Image (tube, rainbow, N blue to C red; front, side, top):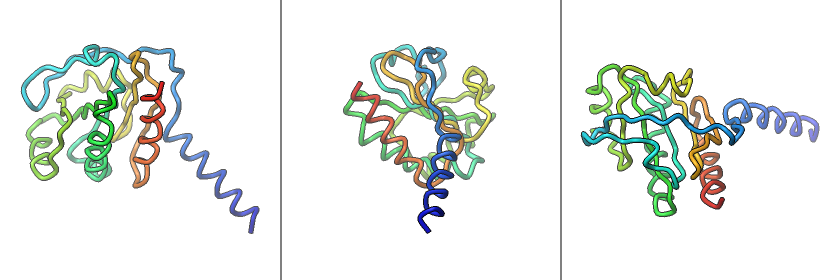
Length: 164
């Protein structure tokens, strides 16, 4: 029985490692400017000094839709500690994202990457993709996909980056 539990633990650890891999911490996150849902432009470089979560999502993505309320909770919990969240929508038509956000409103900035320019900069190959950036503008953590419970890992990594 103990051997089975240990093997399950190893499998879970390895699968988490595939989904949440630590970045080198040496590479600066590529800068970009995108139009936000509020109509203003948001530039990543202007957020230097804060811990930033980039969440690439699409309205047609079931896991993205499931994750969004958790992201809102995380944003509200850590915003006062120098944390911000940018939700980068990759739908070709922003109207789809806007329709979803009417049902699931969020208080963090939603940006539109309709031509996938920023998604390509960040080599996004799964929906959702989440990147955590430290106060120095360096990519530190990368998550591909979403399953319930991943938000606990996000919180742990955000706390760690805030404390640095």
